[in-house]
Image (cartoon, rainbow, N blue to C red):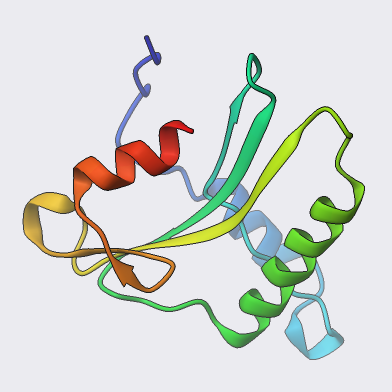
Length: 119
């Protein structure tokens, strides 16, 4: 069983520290977090996920960054592992209970998303 989260509140302390102490985008320095990395160590499969709410899209620079990351991992992953790629999950609002969900820009229901992410 997956362990429970400690809280539903995201601590932004480190995020604010990054904004206050590291170079900004005018220097070419871009920062993004990656929401989830799922792996099955028994089947040796791994997938990267970015989740957006309220139908938000990736920013252009994020799309380029995650596209590069996807390419770099796909080209360098160990032969006995299967990389299932970088994928975007978008919620119309915040979750399945209050709107639609999209997986790589295509509408998906909760059951089908579970199947995709269980690999």
